[in-house]
Image (cartoon, rainbow, N blue to C red; front, side):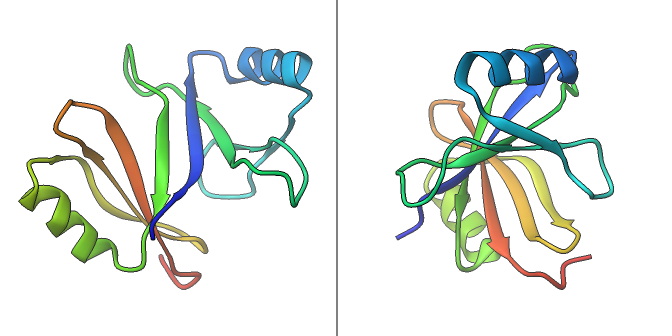
Length: 122
């Protein structure tokens, strides 16, 4: 069953957000060694329940936080979203070395991501 595997916090000032979440919750936040500005958040240690996430620069005003759900087949999951009244927010794109990602909207207008693991994604 697909489950939330990641959350994203868009920030006008990423360093300010990093400072806030580090001080308030003690999260470990480190710059991602990838092709875009992104900071990986570790919220706890295994086997504690919970998910980790990321902070990224805000791309547009009022950009919401988004949860990403792990899926086996992104194309089939997109078809299911569209066939059940959802819509696309951002089309399928590679996250190099990680997998394939798309953002959709549910029937209530909430944005969520779906990620298919694929270390060969380019």
